[in-house]
Image (cartoon, rainbow, N blue to C red; front, side, top):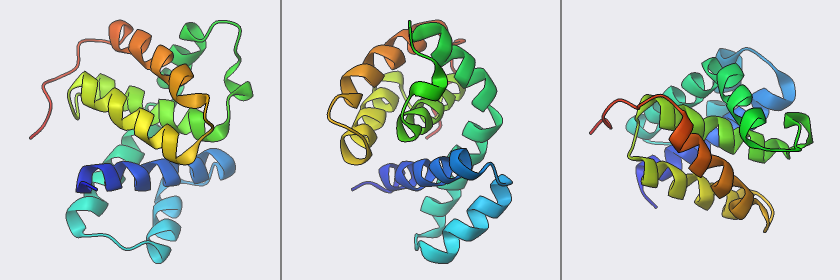
Length: 140
């Protein structure tokens, strides 16, 4: 498993906790890193993704509501909401190429969500990739 994929898993877990508790992101991070171990670079990227996804959550949620016909955000499984928030943040801010962002999100869904989630999330993220502002070039 790549360090970036592991960072995304950690970011997803923190987003899930944040979604459930709505605690300050710094408290979520503090609590999470007491229990999880990671290399400094993995931790740094996970925190960047988590903090970015939280700060962009309202905009990401509006995008999801617009693109998911007949679905209210509250009806989505919490893990799927978190995956979408993370992936849409990455699409908007160019942390990786679009195809990589979507593939990584689908891998997270396969690991942490239901069997039906990858197909649903793929549809939303494909549409989101076409509707979000032009992302900045991916960071190396």
